Each structure stands twice: as C-alpha cells, then as structure tokens.
Length: 331
Image 1: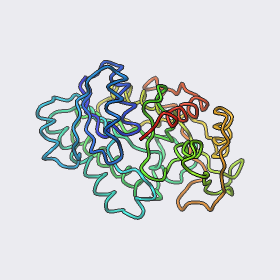
Image 2 (image 1 turned 90 degrees about the horizontal axis):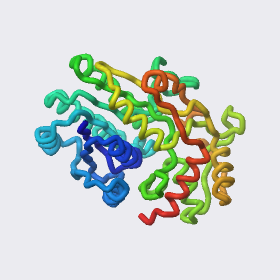
Image 3 (image 1 turned 120 degrees about the vertical axis):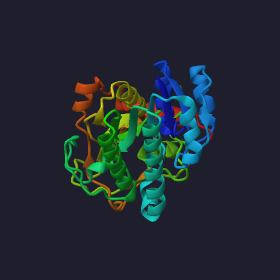
Image 4 (image 1 turned 90 degrees about the vertical axis):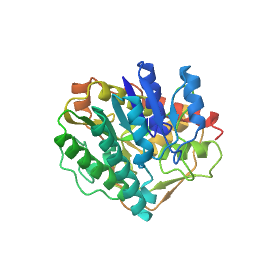
C-alpha cells in the first residue's frame, strides 16, 4: 500500500511513519516544517534503513499538492498536518481556521479526483467538548472551548459530507486522547516550539534543567487530588492504531477513540515521572487555564472490537521513554 503522510515529520506523524514502514508500506511524507524539524527525516531513515520520499510543501496549496497525486497513485492518506496549540488558536483564530480547514479540503478534493480510497484523519478528544467521561463515539458533540478544537470538529463534518457524496471513499476519524512518550530508541519524540503546551514535554524540560519549574494549572477541580485528569496514551500505541485504521478502513465513515480508558491526574504523572526516572520535579500551583476540563478519558472499546487495537504500553513506559528522548535531544 502506498500512503501519503501529511505532517509526517511531526510528533505523532513521525512515529506513525515508522510503524507504516515496519508493515512494509510505501510512505511519502509531506511537511512544511512549521511544527517539525528536517533532522527527523534523517533519524527516520536511520531507524528504518530506508530512503523516505519527502516533500517540503504547504498542504493547503493545491498547485503544489496536485502533482504528487498525479505522479504517485496513492492508496491512502493519513492527514496529520495542522496547527495544534490551543492557546495560540485563541489569539489567532483566523490562521487556525484557514490552515486546518484548507489542508483537509485540498486533500479531500485530490483524493476524490485521483481515486484515493482511504483517508485517515488526525482528530482529537477535544471534539467532545464538556461531555462526561468515559467518552464514547456515539455521543453528541458539544461546543469545544477553543478554535483548535473547533477546527477538528469542522474537519470531521467536512469529511463525513465528502464520504456521503462519494460512497467508495473510506474515511476514518481517529479521536486521540493525550499522546506522550517517545520511540524507545530515544531518537524521535516530541519537540515543541517555544514553551511546551503539553504536560510531559514541560516535565522533561524541567528535569533537564531547561526550565525552573512546572506550572500546574489548578488544584481545585472536582477530581481525587484536585488536578486535571486525562487519558495518557503512548505515542507508539497511537501509531499502531493508525496502521490498523488504514488497513481495515470500511466504505463510509468510521470513528474511533484512541486512548487507554483510564484517567491519570497531573500530580500522579509528576510523582510517577519522579519515581521511574529518579528525578525531582519542582512545581507550582497556579490558576486554571480558561477552557480546561476537570477530566477527560476514553471508552476505547470500539477500537478493540472493530480493529483489534488496544494499548500495550504502561504509564511507566511513557514517562521513561519521554525522558530518554529528552536526554538525547539536542535540537
């Protein structure tokens, strides 16, 4: 199977590329390097022993994207490319709507035109809004709390409509929970631009001495220790879910949660990181961030029953691999 991976040098995209190649698929990467580094390509080729076709292209530009579809005869697309910082989306909503929607529209048009049958979309649990956990795929989606989340929900609606109009198209919407960890080699992992938006990269930067302390946003939530509870999933488990979704895509639209089904609080992650890695993480409790939910965790049973997918790696693996990558990361 020949697969186009947009955003394939980003955090989740790069790990998925490894898994696709492990399954003997032909991969072409498109990435404009907005949220990623070209050095990741060298690392992917080192880990796989393969030359990976790469194009530095902005996906929302159809004039640049169409020649790829003309020349390549893709069997499927996995679409990761997009802006992803929640806070930035609040201050720059137009940029987020333009980029995140147009990339999907351009790809969907080209898939229809060139008869590409499989389209796997990188969605998010943010589309559930403030629905109560455990979150299930059959829930009615509620208004999300930020433009980033709205772009994910809108993209889902766009792809549902495209699939309805094109019965041969197989669309899979993967709603991730909170990916953390890194490849066990320590060569690839999450490299945030500027101040990390996500918990684990912030923790690892504090552990490395790059930042003085971790800021914990709120300890007065209605949770067992007052801090926010999330469903943390190892990025390699997430990558494996993409391969299964691509291989088993059915005509029409399929929606799957990718999570563990278990919630873990911020303080529990800090204590586990300290225990597993033997490093103290100084932190300070500060005010809640607008829009943050008390808890969000998945019901992942549908992915297990229909795809045969479930998480294999533990929280210990996640915090160990995240720290192993940070120690090796010189970018």
